[in-house]
Length: 273
Image 1 (cartoon, rainbow, N blue to C red):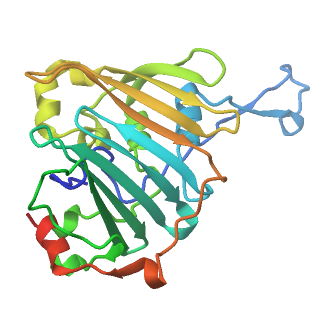
Image 2 (tube, rainbow, N blue to C red):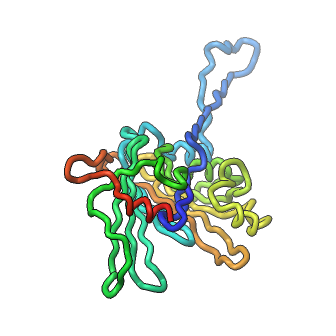
Image 3 (cartoon, one colour):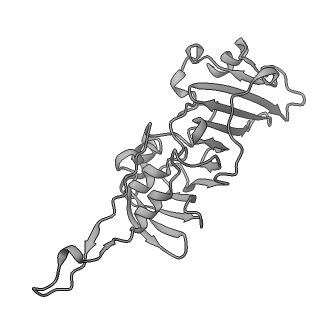
């Protein structure tokens, strides 16, 4: 999702649903010779490749609530994901380089509904900032100029780790739960993880971008780091996604009662620029 100045496009979803099918091939091992009985031969499943193991570790709809964090060259996001509720909470903070104040914006999404909470800090001596209620502000997408930019529930893999791993051209296991390899950022849905201009600027190097990944003892992906090389005027930077606290993180629920209200006109004026 591209959020302009509201929330950065760090954790854009590139597909509505990422389906990962891991098919284990069965090897029939015979004893050889004319008297061997194929029907009685034992069957063994092929061990999953490192890439298959990583894909299986990507969050899916069966997971319990978990926390996530992510960052790229321009932004940092953190929050919660609750697949059972089709809910997530995204928090983004950005400091104004010129005036020095910080805007902390949080979106809460439950299915098709979205709420927003905004807080400004470091504003001493400043005037003109919008005065918003401190409650959760329920947004009407029809009143947003760019409704498509507002976050929606599109699946639990908010960091796009599935499309990235699917585009991996090499994956090696480097120890218990540790993996490394290269990803082709021009392939499939991985091509949409970065902005198109940035991918074009990377040129041939976009086809073999190094990455590392970590899978926890519970089989869940805990971290993926993509080392994006320098391109044009942009310096090299890490694209990082972290997932943790699977099954123990707080659930995401719709704010109710005095904790929420409909967003006032000034909230839409801020969002619509």
